[in-house]
Length: 426
Image (cartoon, rainbow, N blue to C red; front, side):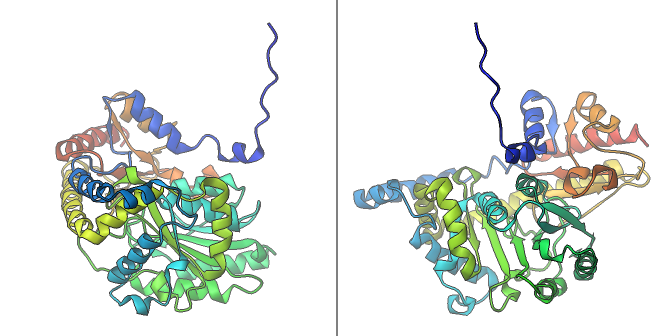
């Protein structure tokens, strides 16, 4: 029996293969007895079953409306939902819709915010182009950058988030190296960062835009603001977006999702983009899907219009606030006696960022990860995944802990197990 010759896969596939997220998902599926503090999944008990049932009933009550929702949509997405999102954005910014300075034509609806992140990379970045990212940063976006053969460079952060002076210093270095023409993008998670839980301070939001404009000598350097966790706010100050500091709205790409605040199964996100980027993004998006799920967009429009959304977000935030507090309480209980261990106290989001002594590695191949998963039955995300650059130049002693999917007892149990595994390495 003859065998077929091998399939010749593209270079782009090789660049995007072996993603860490795939390994983590596989571990979660294959080790169901393991308490996962790794999964970025949302709280199961607060998923909006009642709200969705009501919205679907409303949507299907009128035959013509139902058929419109079940038909193809447009690449940019439902005009009705985009109009409602202008009002939603205005409420979050604390202004009237007229004061936003944009219309719905600058909004693009996507399959979650992740699709917009991917589209931006596809449209803006050629192989060898450069994107500046926070250290640490959202590791799935680093996969997007790898997938288009772009170079990602880590920018120093502190408790106030990405540092504008550090961005400027790196841009000056790249100019001296003859690489400034390759810099296309600055990426940041502006609210309750995945993975660090930190929030970019208000004092730094405008200056980051100023730095991008200052160094846009040959072409515009854009700022990609990922606001996925904006509405998961539990305490602390409520801040206007980075986008709101961009008075001409030609520098910042803003993206948000309803996956965290409502339901990930709907996969509805959106982007607010500069006018001259709308058609390039839609052209690329049209090659992929002709438009994201039209029915889901109409359903979400009903949720927003009926007032079901705002009440649900309050419920979700209450649930996550309790979970965050449970993780921080468990951290105090089980880790306080371990020398050199520290953690961030986030004001929102889904994650707690923990640092161990520098000599304790946390990666997939480390003794700690093996013992934590195999002996103690607990899983986390290694912090080294969340940095750009060569592995031997990244911090190797940190971890991302998620309180999203576990219940209160599961969080406490998982932290107890993890502390036991860490204690064995101290």
